Length: 114
Length: 114
Image (cartoon, rainbow over all chains, first blue to last red; front, side, top):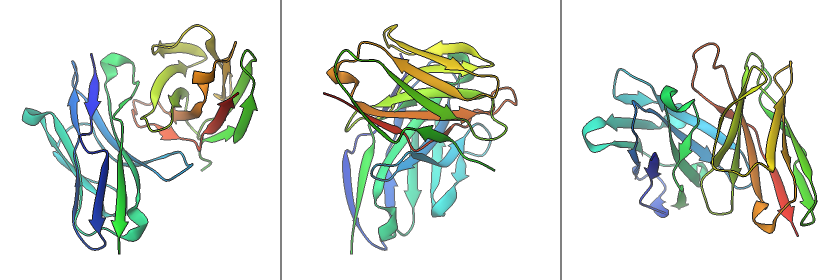
């Protein structure tokens, strides 16, 4: 069965500090990987995606993620966090073989302290 | 370019009633997926519509049904509402015919069942 694990429910970082949000997946097919961000009461905004090729992908708002097939991971990073980055972050996995449905992790809530 | 829109924004229904939620896909997109996001959880895939046909379904009972129209907009219908149906319902559009697996989400409809 397909599953996505985000081990950290909450993370608090200081403004200006670096950030890494973890994501591990279990998938029977070659995965497509995504990170989405959700502000309170809002829909999901696509931050970045990985389909194939270079395993380090750049996204919007200064975020990047690295796909590591051997570890089944797709961790999200940002070198310097801004207060406006406070939100909930979701990792998601899809595959052509599964009809393009996305399987989401439970999310990580990011708090930024000044 | 018009993004994904959903209506209504909020809805309160009584147990046993029926509800219809609406979604207009992003310009140029031909595929609509619906997700249910319960409080504190990641989105769960309900079903997907592609060229007016259901193209995959998650683990939801038949009282969850949908439609896609020739203009690619979509409806989600839920019959015999239960308290556990209270959630944020998200619609996402994509261009499956064009081989794109990125899904773009609308702001959601918050359904409360009392």
